[in-house]
Amino acid sequence: MALSATISGDCRLLTIAGDSTMSGAQVDLYWNDATITSVPYDPSTLLPITSLDATGSLVLSIANFVDASGQPTTTYTHLNGIFKIVITVASALTADTVYEIGAVGMCDINCCLGAKTKELIQCKCGDCSECTNIISDITKIYLLLNGAKINVAGCVQTNTLYEASIDEYLKAKTICGTKNCQCDC
Image (cartoon, rainbow, N blue to C red):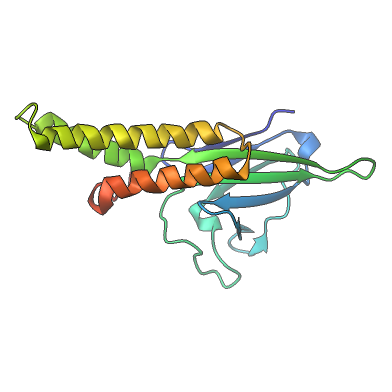
């Protein structure tokens, strides 16, 4: 059974794709936290997501992250961060089957890397401390982000790795600073 979770290149859509054998499976979504995020399926009806559709799939945008009164549950404008999706396929004959998949939204961090690379290109002093600090920041951000992606890598092996991924993502964001992460890409 093929199951995947992907975030679009512009970090506006999270697509969970399974197959028809997963139709009706329960979905629990974790986003930059180890607690379940409440996600209504359709903002106009405000019904909570409880299952995948008939094809075993689900597509979410930032508009889906609202509470019962229609108020946003996040200040994010894009799906940036670390996602853990737990899908439970119920079975009347055997034990339920649980799948854990992950995805990383990194538009804000990629934007930061782009801004810092531009700074580096404009740096004229070569080996001075300013240029060395920029290279150091780029290296740390890149390694932290890739560590997070490897920890999640399409699946979530343990809660410890999921939490480590969150820490790596948030540390990369801290190194970026607020100035370099707000380009609304």
